[in-house]
Image 1 (cartoon, helix red, strand yellow):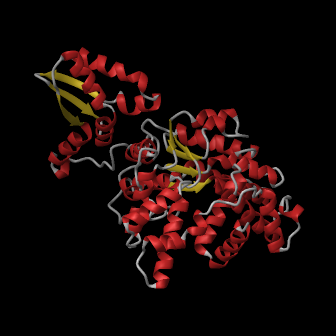
Image 2 (cartoon, one colour):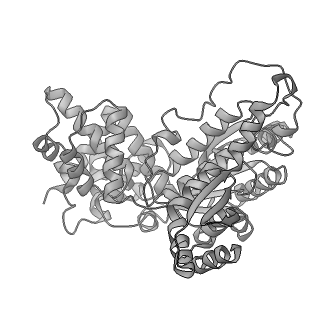
Image 3 (spheres, one colour):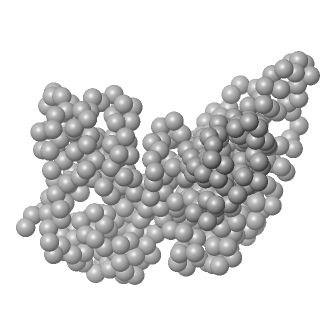
Length: 469
């Protein structure tokens, strides 16, 4: 009877992506089939739930077609059995164990220390970015499940975890959630979350300090901070390494040091490793050593769920029809979707009204309006240059002082929002800048619009002028 199970599994393997096959299909073990009951064994509940939702119906259909009878399934979850066995051992005989998977060569080899107060959350982790606040849908289900698996068993098999997808789709949320969960399970471990831009900036600063002091202490401190100290290193926007040869070399050795010490590495990018421009082959190869997961643009149902979850967290009463209206018109990314809800809630609060369909249409009409036909990056650049009284060639040139850099970032942000140009295309129109520079500018202006009313006002004024026929 076990052959029946094996044949059914083989029948669906060609239809399953290799990464899904290795992660979710093969770890499920059939331990017996008796009197129409199939006994399966899963390493943990996440494997069990994913397998039940995605593979089990097809396998049962194949088996029932071959055997001409119905089957029922019983699951054993090894993680649950291990926990039960641990609870049955007298307290004095239990060994010190901090989780289902320890980091070999890192925190796992440290001697047990006396009980201490709970460790403070790493300062780089944002409180709201946890797994329970992440809305799962068909376009991010695999990435979410992979992130949960890595958080539950860091450095066990999928190392590094590489998550890729467009801007504003939830990559940073997943990375932060991994950090939160590992810190919760292993509070004594050092979890380091950084952007790639910070890694590069710290590296350049350390090199400059070393040259000024004619000593090696600055670089030693840098390498200790990133190669030795972390038990888990999480790096967002790894595409920022593009065309930065010295930084790539340093990250290459940082990656090797952590990986060889069996410490978990998690990376996020806007592209697949093979598609990262200006990144050395040896780095791209290492990025593929573990598991690669994509986050795609959410579908309508997921966008509605995201809005409802955000409204619930912010204690905003959002009618279903208003949520559906917003989700149907704002399709690009989650960040814009949540921004529209914040603007709608703020307007309703200011006017002392409940959110209605009429208010939703009125409050976000400018956001939903299509960019005027024929709007070009050059038109955006001219409008921004005139507003800030800077020369157009400076806006597109290499100058970095704030009087030019800040308007340039706003121009990049508006070009991305109001035209159909890609990040590389926008970068090329700003003096051949790298696409990662454009992404960084867009994100910074998005953040400033949420935090600084003056920036929000300037951007709104410029956008209004550009949208006029």
